[in-house]
Length: 327
Image 1 (tube, rainbow, N blue to C red):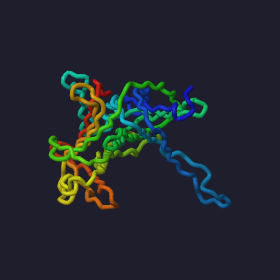
Image 2: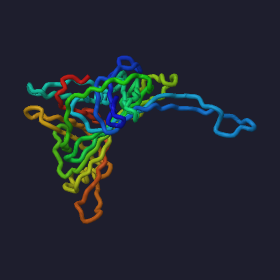
Image 3: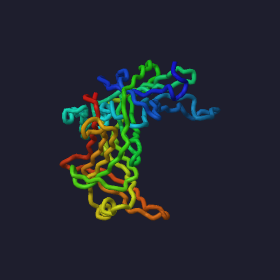
């Protein structure tokens, strides 16, 4: 029996080999909030009939899928599977200078054929843990954010072909991990970006645009495919008004810049730290002129959106960890 509160909760995932077919979770993330919920579409049975009042006499299920979300501090290990499903690519981690550090460079690609099972363990007050299991899962987004010296937190979003409550709970098991607590922001020419000072916080959101409602039976929709832009990267940087050339001048001129958001944690070996790094070869700024709202230091809020660089791509995501394999 678990504790009959959120202290007994768990969230785990595993890749599926067949779309929509359950695979017991094999990696778990400690989180602050999470859920796996069914999304059931219903249509009332209605019709004008003398003497009948009310919304209808019955309702029928016309669609069934599900959504999920995890929020928490981003761990330094065991994120490769999720990031592969988000970005669509599966790089081979490269050992760094014969140390225990391994670098994986994710690029944006089609994530069709990548699906997973996610399971949320939700404790009843009695201590029994109810498992809600999503199958045919697609990763639809990840938002990363932190203060300059705060811990990196994330929000991961999922869509599921179906969510059930009849699957037994997979017993959680956790590995050692750390967190990332140092933010650096860099702008300039791609691969030669320079760090800027005065940044108080930053966030970035990576989103998949998918069509989840292709024709199919309720609870048995075909795997979603990319639509719209396919992939979007947006975010916000909150700097002091330290150097107008960093943000304001670029915004006024309508010029693009490469942008790097890099979070680091503990040292692994030599000069290699646990790292999560988002690189955008071309971003345009949406707002970068601050206003004065009192006697304090003038601060701004700079929104950005990534555009396709036809040479270097839309976005890249790098991790350095001790994980020798991703999946």
